[in-house]
Length: 115
Length: 115
Image 1 (cartoon, rainbow over the protein chains, first blue to last red):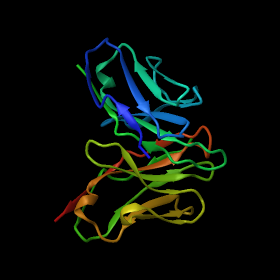
Image 2: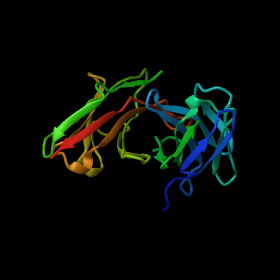
Image 3: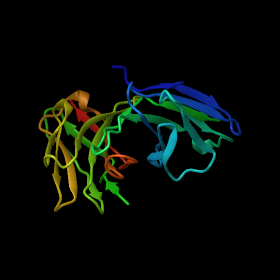
Image 4: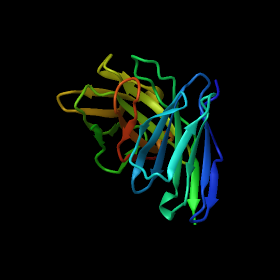
């Protein structure tokens, strides 16, 4: 079974631009979560989508948004990029079976550099 | 809210020596705990997880962790370090079991293995 895939793997943008990152979950997984990883703040939860609905959200400004499609693929968008948005963005998918603690499987990440 | 503390940012051991990476958690409900490993330029890989089934959890690559409620700890150990174990290790706690879960990560510990 193929793992979580993320595209692109690397991205360079300039301040003020916007960016869209894509995540394809493991086949059959319905939950997709996004995390930001930086040297200073570590791994921080951005948001989680399940069945095309945002179920959980971290403490990030509204410039960070996302969506999920009917095939469970998810996109994350960051508008008006700032230098501090430079980070590794990780996507994780899980089967999310009720009553059982699902495991989140992570993709390789998209490394975003904002100049 | 749940939180995880990983004391120290760097651990160095000799090849063949015991590996001990510490993790303490704070949770108002029975926690779900995880250890992930991140190799350079890669995403996170699950090493093991605690979901209340057994206090001693065995994971991949010879790692194991013991859940100690009285000490609020979930330390990761491996009897004999190998060069390939050099990576960054993250302890994480789930926000809630099952649906709507998100992971709260510790700051991570970099493990170096000396020849």
